[in-house]
Image (cartoon, rainbow, N blue to C red; front, side, top):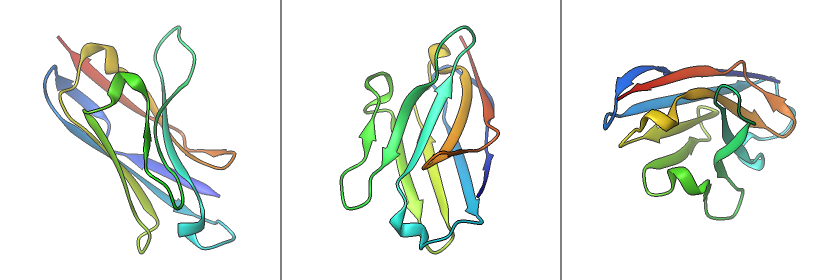
Length: 112
């Protein structure tokens, strides 16, 4: 399985970014997989940002609830993360996850 994340970058506080993750090399139909975004800030543990659960409602980590939105396009095998009202504490490397596979991560930097 390959997970290619894109869309990271630098933004001022209050701004928006959209991350995208393209999946390939998986065995079953893409829509049968739960897809998630995690992040890891310097000196901190990796934490769940958002998850698209098959047959259920999306799950969001408390720090991002109401600001971030996860969505998927099963036809394109992609999962996106729309990030609004960004804060400096959102600065981290963001990782796409499918089952026990991880993408390389994309850096998001939010300046105050």
